Image (cartoon, rainbow, N blue to C red; front, side, top):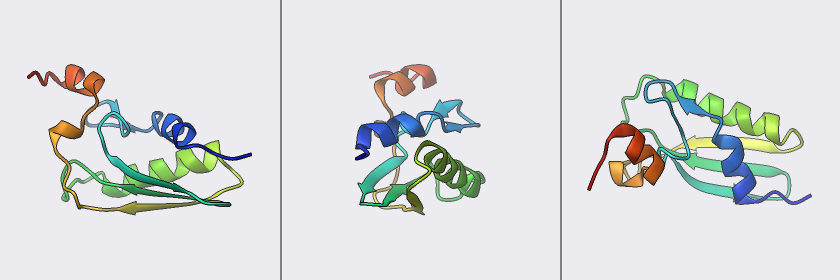
Amino acid sequence: MSITNEQVRSALENVIDPELGINVVDLGLIYNILIEEKKIAIDMTLTTPGCPLAGMLAGNVEQALREAFPDMEVEVSLVWDPPWSPEMLSEEAKAQLGYTR
């Protein structure tokens, strides 16, 4: 069975940022997804480098992927380049947070 980026993103839609109540995919925190034969590697960021939930959110991403794909090795890396900005929000998240053009 080959895993797709869409399947990985779908699994990560269950990981909710507790401060904002929006999932990490719609927040634009998932930068890169690399799927190899037996490994899923994720590059993710946070809304700010000093986010107090850094360890928890990265751990929740890792746990969600391990539960969805139990036969895969999972690696989650926090990255800060490019820096997160509100433009990375999905349209749904922008609406929830009141961002308008």
